[in-house]
Structures are given as C-alpha cells and as structure tokens.
Image 1: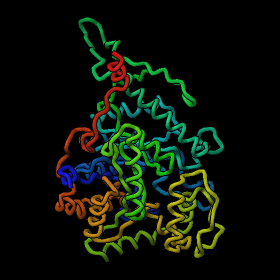
Image 2 (image 1 turned 60 degrees about the horizontal axis):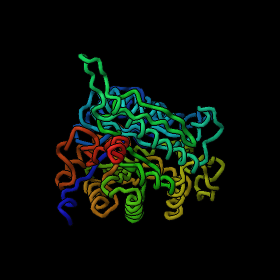
Image 3 (image 1 turned 90 degrees about the horizontal axis):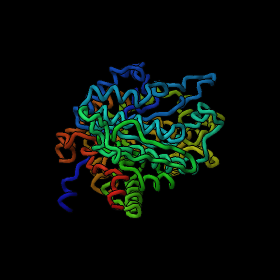
Image 4 (image 1 turned 180 degrees about the horizontal axis):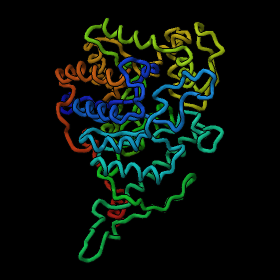
Length: 454
C-alpha cells in the first residue's frame, strides 16, 4: 500500500432533502412538517454537518413535483416535493457557514448555459469557493410540461445536449483570467482587455457569445458533480465530472463501476485522482442492532401503499403499477425514456431477491435504489471502511432517513468511529471545496491555449 493510499481519507457528503430520504419522513413525529420552507431547519442541518467536517451538503432538485397532484388521492405529495430552489437556498446558507461545500442539482435539459454559469459563478464568489454543480439531464417526466414540451427529449439526445452544455458553461467560467481586473481608479482602467476571452460558441444546441458578466470563480470552476450511471452518463462523467454520485447494492457491482469509470479517464488525458466516486448510503443507525431495526420499522410503518406505489412507478420509468397485485411479482415492462440505470437496478434487485411489488416499494421507500443499512455503529462503519479500502468508493453521500434525527445519529455515532479508525478528518484541509476534496484548481483553458500558441 502506498504512503498516499494509507493516508487517504473518506470524503462525506450530507445529502439533505427537506425531511429526510424516506418517502414517509415528513410524517415522522420528530421532523418539522414544513421543513421544505423552513430556512432555520436547513441552517441547523448545514451548521451541524459543517461542525462534523462533512465535505459538502448536497441538494437534489426537480423543476416539477414528483407526485401527480391531479390524482384523486393526493397523499403521494410529500414535503420533499415542495421546497426552496437550491441555488437560492445555498446562497443563503453560504452566509451562515464557512467551510462546507454547497452542491446544487441543476438540469441541463430545462436551463440555458449562460444562466447556469452565472448562478454558480455567483454562488462560488458568495461562498468563498465552496460551490458545486450536480449536472443531471432530468429524470422527472413532469418537468417537460412546465417548459412547453409534451415529453422529455429522448435519453441519448438529452446527453448530447448535456455534453455541449457543460462545454459552454466551463467556457463562460473562463471568460476572464484570474487577474483580468485592475480596477485602477487613477488611470480609469477597470480590466485588461488581453485577459478577456469571448466564447463565440455556435453548436448543435446552443449559440452563446459571452463573456460572463461575473469574474472568474474563486475555484476556477465550481466542482462538477454528476449522477448518471448509464453508458452516455459514464462517458460524460469520464470527460468532465470531478465527483460522481452513484447507486450500488453490492461491493462487486460498486467495484466494477469504480474501475470502469476510472479506467475511462486516460482517454481524456485525466488521472484517476481527478474523479471521486461517491455511492449513496442510507444508514439507519442505532446503539444496538435492535434499536436500529425499531427506528426503521417505525418509519416503514408510516409508508402509505399509494405513496410507495407512486414512488416505485416513477423510479421504473413512469409506469403505472396501480392495476397490478401488490403481493405479486414486478411485471416485465418496456424500456423507458426515464433514468436507465435506476430502472435496471430495481429490476435486478426484484429478480435477485424475488420481491413482490409491495416488498420492492418498501425496499425503495427509503434509499430509492441506494445501499440501505440498518444496524449498529460497527455495521455502518465496517461497510464504509470495506467499500473505501476495496476500490468501490472514494467517499459516500450520506442519505439520512429523517431530518434532523438521521443526520444527528450519523454525526454522534458513526463519525467518532470513523475517526477512531483514522478514516475521517478532524479538521478541514483547505478553504475551498476543491481543496477539501483533494481536487486541483483548473487553469483557464483560453489562457493556456494562448500561452501554447505564443
């Protein structure tokens, strides 16, 4: 084992939907029922995660409700469906935190690159270099109707568009050299025109002149995060992503994904350390196994069948399962235009463990296809250590079942154990999210090009 490998430490993201990850979390007695619109709730979570030295907090997002609010039984709607827009929320949290990274999900399917580049550059400046963008191509079919479309672009076309989108965004972030602005009051010169780069992008999907009307971000580029595990998703990640958020059920599948993804980097002139792989982990942790099981049973009991079914239907590509026997097997369904990797993962899980529809929705009610662990401190810490040391993960996105309790449990019980094993930091290494993740700061692509030409 190299010196570097021995000193390598686990990175941790705190993935914080308003009420927690369990689909019934908002019904839990300890969860504020208005969590999605309570800034003080998010502020307490962010400050707790920062005090525990998490690398980043992570906000998912969708530009539509996940539940169909027009159905006669609207109990499918929950507190995680209605919540603050993430960049707005993270900008507010930037003012009440100092170190923790602030990662927001924003889709390339229903945004313009200029808006997105400007928003994240602003967040990076406001936070002193702590912004991260989680690129998605939209899994929620309902988003299309909010943007004048009847349905999503076809899956592979969404990725084609995303490929061009990210190039435009990074080009805009490089509109100015780091030292482009003199702001010299004496001479009246505000900037050095030689350090300005006009993008003049003309592509299949976008035509963007530039420059960005925000100075180059403190991190050069906000950290680029991605969550797709499909074939086009992996290829996009290998070329552009710095953190990949993924879902796996077994060590072997996680190892295969990890080595596949890292193995693709060299063709883009990148080394394995330039990309961090973060599987999602849904931990229900107790001081004893039975305490953890009791906690889990309590929240599982709050899952209404209509809600579990609605969640599962959405995750397997939007197919309505309400006509099928809940205690029968998952039927064979046609391939969807939704998220490919999650649909395949759930099919495999149902077949491997011979689960009924009801058992499958109860399995996904919390972790939504991510690894779910119900156990004592040793069980959770052993899993993290095994996946981390056996080439399956560089870190984990921790998905608390309920908030604030699930985060508090992890911080109070698991983090001290990880520190005892030398696996997790006691202090932040740097000021920016990049520094804390061990990622280098990118140079300006245009300045580099001009230096080579000169």
